[in-house]
Length: 285
Ligand code: PMP
Image: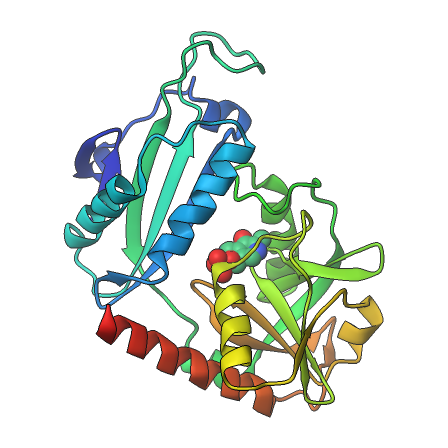
């Protein structure tokens, strides 16, 4: 049984109740994080808490907890759940109002909810064969840098991939790569790893940062710059990155092979560096 946290209480997930007047439900008015946990230790926790703080500040929702309080609640949720490797979901909404009103309530009592699931990283066959992606126009709003619970556009874009038996939808805006529907995207051309620059058009992924740090650490040639749609369509390698997918090769795009159609050497190397890094950090923290 999965144990969750709701507004100061730890309780079984199927007993947790939130009012339909919660602004998270009525407006998607809230922020969230997904934190991967390996061997019961949260990975890059400070960075996830900092990103949550940035989202909350940007949507003018006072952070209900200090970082040490967040660390304690997250630690409890991990301890009270049965899995060694977990994916902790954390959400803060602007709470319950007595009327449905777009403008903020005068007094805000945020709803704080955390739950955990077993962490499921991509199976070996997906890592070895790669996965298929489709492309779509990025029709989301202009604050994609915020991790808000208003996720309808991302849900529609992800379903677009699922409808075509694909794993991810790769998004282009005005002829440039932005990201995936639930991941960041990296491109390899002529041995150089390319990453789109952080901006209001993409989520600053925690895994994205790790990938760039690993590229610097190991001297992998890379460029952080705007990437043309055409460069993606003629890439040698494409990968997606996220806290749960880690680093995963995309070997088909819109039914055409990416490069040779097999996972490439740079992505394999990055995946290995990522696993090593994870294991080292987890041992030392
Ligand atoms: N972009 C989007 C739109 C996402 O939803 C996510 C997370 N699933 C990411 C990028 C990757 O972020 P992270 O590495 O922090 O999981």
